[in-house]
Length: 200
Image (cartoon, rainbow, N blue to C red; front, side, top):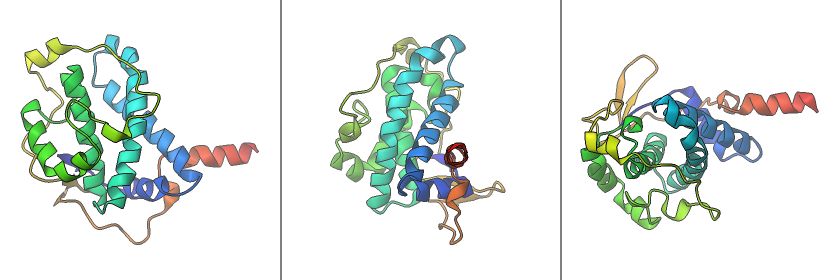
């Protein structure tokens, strides 16, 4: 899969495993991902999917941390969560939100099969053991979009590895090494923490 990787990704990685700050970053990342993917959907479908995506992306933050703890580099840990999301979009028939075409899902699954098997993650059950106790909000399916086979936001041809686009457009296969001077305050959501501290 083709991903981006910049200072905000590294900062988010560190922040998500930091007490207090991690909660704010988690919430901001969930909001960001929900908005990004809803903007790919038809306008009349967005609100009916919002609660589902909020719940789903919140669960994938736990997947991300678990993948990091299992030794996956940042790009691959993040890619695992994107693959989960594409499984979910596929099963809901949300073809327009998919980042990869349906015929590459199996290849992505196989690359992370060991991790997915450990946590019971499948195409039909994208969260596996990361599914919240209270479940995930339901959202209407649109199987007709999948039948039409239109994956207008999917990028094909990157199923064999994690391809990371750097800040200057350069491509790194497998991602880049983490910088030594990562500033956690660059992570999304840290500003919210700063504003709350000032309000107190």
